[in-house]
Length: 412
Image (cartoon, rainbow, N blue to C red; front, side, top):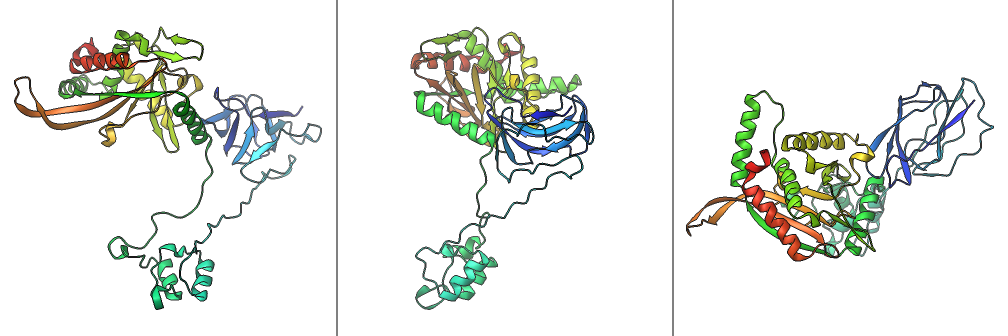
């Protein structure tokens, strides 16, 4: 008997998914547990596994389609079985034309998409009628083209020169006249839409404030170098990063100032007894925050290994919902790309997030008043003032600095 394959809820906040890629076509046989397609959710692109065995009789949602939760994406059954008796599929909010109904004898649906041409900007530019016509035909944006005709008017040769990468205004001779990218628009992905929605909500509903300190990073750099040398000599494949130390130090600072490990719940404030430590991982179309569960009960090496494993899964789009939800505190680090300091937006409903900058070599004043070479790293806490006050955020940073400036305690 023919059965529907429907869009599953692959993340807690998912309301629809995009059929990113089909691994099967009409007429292929499938079995339970076999990956048949890839679905883009609001968090990641995830594999869609079959729950039933049989032959794919119909693909109801072509690649690129947006399908609501429980909406039909395909029909599976016995070879040659008719599918007309099944009810119509749930509405598909498709980025491409909807798929036509097909039977087992029909090929997989093919979708043709008309190219989108960006409008040519003519504005109030002085341009000859012929040049205007040529620009429209060739898709040239004349707003940045330097005119060589009378009174600076753009003529045909200027348009043709611009199309071939010719001069553009006054700086063209120095930097070249080619555009930095092709004009156009791209649809908002599920992940980008979710990020936009959550961050607008966070920034407009949570009263952010920021507390910053610098930490002496020299002891941390020295310990990291010696620890990695020891691991290499022991044949260990693990290589410790600065972020590994920051993650473990954050856990210890939360142990000393546990009130920061809280969430705003409207009529109440939830104090978390466990530290579920989230950390930001950049992806091509946004970011995701994998979560190290019960980080307060794990030693330094375990946290470092889990961070690397979760980071790799995040970049491969293989995180499961339980691996990126339920965090109680987040660390965001941009130091690896040279950003010296920044302020992060809260990851709701968490009450605080830590932003970590790059280690910078600079002159510092020693205890005896002498100016000596030093290494400093910026730490900025963004906090929800409904839960955390300035003194509390300052106490957390003080504890974090103390741990990072005596990093040997992290290895105990």
